[in-house]
Figure (cartoon, rainbow, N blue to C red):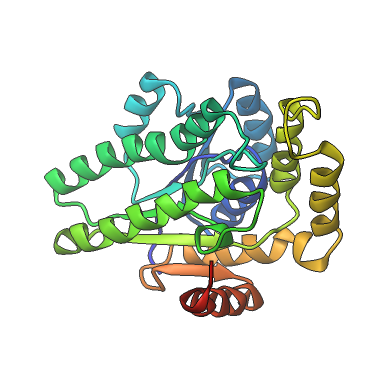
Length: 268
């Protein structure tokens, strides 16, 4: 595997931060971008303390077109679209503006960033790689997570199309599909519906929804150690070869395959 320069969005915490540090330790040059300015200095200080002078920390707020334009001009070999957010709650009752926001952050804005990068790469003849952090939820849909996972379904389709469209240019496309690792991301997402869900207005009751989330996070599948996923990301992201889709852990991959097969016999 050759040394890479890797641009990561959403590197201020969780998978992005852990993998950024891990890949830097392996000798890759990292452009670790964070969502808000207040995350920049702490991460710069952390990587400096680790002796990682090959990590450059920048702000990249996907909702800021100037941030996107600046990032599109940087020189890198791999674009890892890792930033995202999630809205949970019953699809039939969630406010539509929250659905639109989730698609804007998870689908439309990463696509804006990616299109600009790809056009430059194609015009320059650069053979880079684009990775999207999808989810196990990009391949199935559990109740009360439908809004968020539908954005990941969209990313799966976009990535599959890009793989076919860009093959002739030598540009590679991948997805990474984590299970429900306990990073704080899913747990925070599960809190989101309680800012709008109202027992006096909605049929879905707050206590019932909370119990469903709490019961899931109490299972081993709902609180897996993220170190496993980070170690796999450190291998997958800079690699020159590999699978198009990367589901981790294996037991989740097996579950998803069974689910997709069973979908052909699903009855209304």
